[in-house]
Length: 126
Image (cartoon, rainbow, N blue to C red; front, side, top):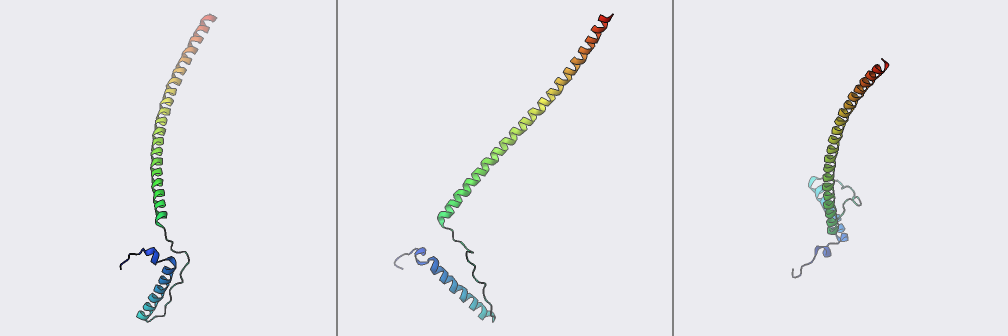
């Protein structure tokens, strides 16, 4: 060939359909002749195969990469939130323990105050 031609200029959607239809017919004839059968191929189904353009594929890959980045960011956020949750949980536990200690101290002081008040009452009544 003296001149190079792009495949899309030679093979269009319509020409490929014609070629594929002829291939299907030839294949089933050859199959039937070889095996002495009278089989038929299933009818072609509309829209079974879809061609994806390279531009659409680039957009898909970009979108896929962005989604992966978003997933990684979200996983990092979840990890940070879990760490924060654990910190808060341990702080709540510490505060709960401190509350118990303070409550026990208050109860001791209340009982001491009652004893003092009862002692003072007893001395006043004498």
